[in-house]
Length: 132
Image 1 (tube, rainbow, N blue to C red):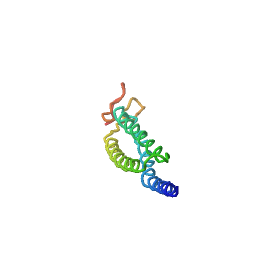
Image 2: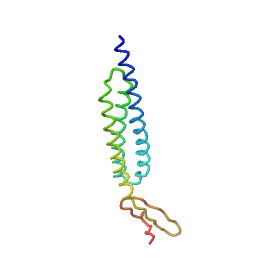
Image 3: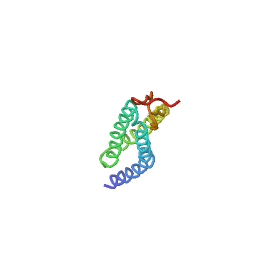
Image 4: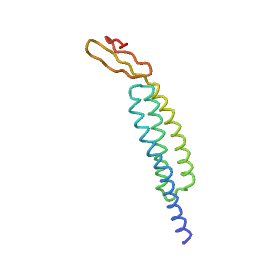
């Protein structure tokens, strides 16, 4: 019985370390993804990509959090997954940030009304002309 108690406290210590090292980083990455989604709403192709990354993120995040919460779950595979996902989502966020940089903004005018249009290849709505 003492060996089991040691294993349980050892697991609890490892869970704390994983939460500090990876889960907090994943939480920050999730905030970054949501901010990117806001910026990408203007362009359907970009929105589709960021939504796919968020869906992947959500399923992996819940697997990590649920695995950490389950005392019967072996800890090493969860730690490996957390480490891998932090790296993978870091790369995905960087790529999405580069895509956001490729968005262009134009100003369109119709009489005294002006509109800003954002997109990869923005075009003015019907009746508006692009401001030079």
